[in-house]
Image (cartoon, rainbow, N blue to C red; front, side, top):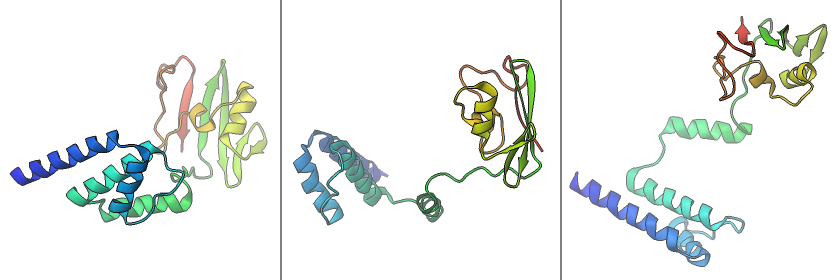
Length: 166
């Protein structure tokens, strides 16, 4: 236990020292830590953060396999996984006293007899302004309502937001 605290204190001190190094000194430290020349476009801040991460990884261990697989999947697919709404799902939103019903289709979203490629296109058509469609229809990745600082929840909402109904 005492050795762990001592190691943690040493890593903490090394990270604090990294913050005070000039860019050229950080580049030299990178070569020692990673065994290669750092990428040219990395800023001083990013160099320091990546070196600190590597020092902590060596001292305390890295990510588990599940986390590595998850991150690899994000990197391969260009971001977080997209939400999949099943065809037939009905989204309802009341806006300025008018109820808008959107049905998820295999090839997009149906609203007022027209199929749109995205919920954002429908939100724009309804409001006349640029909206995030998932935000306008109060969706989150798990399908729960999304609340912003300026919006109330689904029940008792002033703006009438309603989430998905399957």
